[in-house]
Length: 394
Length: 181
Ligand SMILES: [Zn+2]
Image (cartoon, rainbow over all chains, first blue to last red):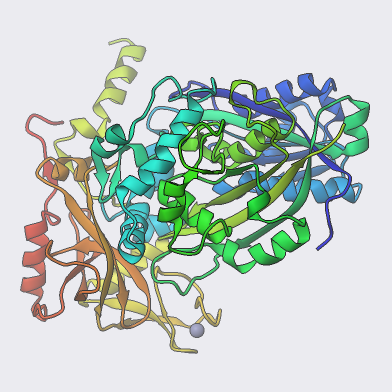
């Protein structure tokens, strides 16, 4: 696979997180575009590539948005792939820039949160969920992930206390990130364990809070980023795989296992070199699964790994091994803004690597891994994706 | 009554929580409706591929293995193994919200001996992962067919037995609200 030399990731923007909002997806997507242009010091007409992900555009598409927003892209992408949408947009956009198909690509994920919108999304998520999963208790994603979590716990001996490690350290990180909807509240292990039950082993703090919000970044050439005087991050390697391990009756691993070794070889760095890790945390068990499948520990050892690892952004926790994880609090603390949640790890990684993370800056962050997972078509998340990003001299 | 007030009331009265009768989710795709139709006269009918023998679930138009347009509904043996189960405490749907006021709702996943993994209602709360089960189909109170698992040694040959199990789950009747609309 060809490398990503000369590609720059710039202007990470997070916009408008709210528990409920009167605004539609176009408002969040357009606002992110406006803010990114402001930060880049460019006019929107200079954006000639447009990659969009959203669940709540309704009858509209990325094409409709070009007319709404008054842009004239010569390259367009609409990948509604939920939890991998940010990494997928990054991959596609990077190639477009390298191949000269676009100069400046705006990659944006955004969704509204109208009254009862989450219920409607869950009830209509896919034809298989309509026919074969929603009728069984109508619990939305909680049902599938409750089954996955209880199966994982039985198979590998993980306990709720282990999942608490992930949620509690993430909340600590969110306490330093003003954008996190739950960042004003602390979370202790006791609070995590005593939370009200939702489904099987899942309790309140295992579940993300659906919300509205937008996330975005722009992809351009390094030369262009330098000319615009923008701090930027580079891409060392990426990969994706969908519907892997279809033969597993219950999901306990994702597509990463199939390509992660070659991925690290291409990147020239391994998991031990990472200054932070952003996983897709729709549920703590999914973060644990990623830590295993991305090679931070062996399969089934995620439980031990989180207990031996300080996942706070500032290395202030007691465990000896340090790996800042979901450094802005992840979705569990920020809220899950639909498709924007699939961008969250990417924008946060660019913030960290360009020194723009403010109060929750990981000291000396040079290399980071961001991973995506998602799209529960029926009984499991089908998508997996990963990108290794690096700080670059400007 | 002025128009805006009328709309307000209408919106209010369309809230599922105010309805006298709440039913299980009725929505199905056209393929799901065909699954329901095929199962009305069978204790379990699934799509079988006449080209490669694959048993397909959830219903699709083409065989998920060989991609041939060769799927037909056939009576299917419902035995299998319970993979995982969960007690729901929370639902997005009014029917289940009302049922949950009376206790948890148990659902799970089963690997059928015939091949597919099915999500279903659990008809016996004592069932645990790795237990052998038998799966059957039945109409729920929205006249859509759903799947239910019971222990393998449970004799479900009589449709009256199957109906009784569905009744004991509270699936055959809507969930009522006194004074609802
Ligand atoms: Zn076939």
